[in-house]
Image (cartoon, rainbow, N blue to C red; front, side, top):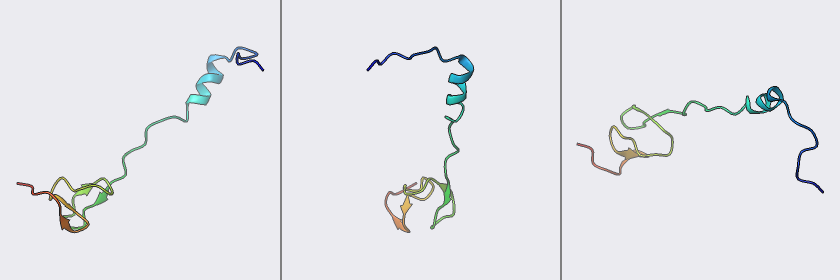
Length: 59
């Protein structure tokens, strides 16, 4: 069994394969305490709370 490719893949064929690999926009949710946009399952940077409990104190 050979690891080497049998035939050369053209640039267009190679690039068609890579066309679906792209970054997606980050999913944002509203904070349950202050309403600021934040990433899900993380401490809110605006108020320092997670799941309506204060985790860190924000000045």
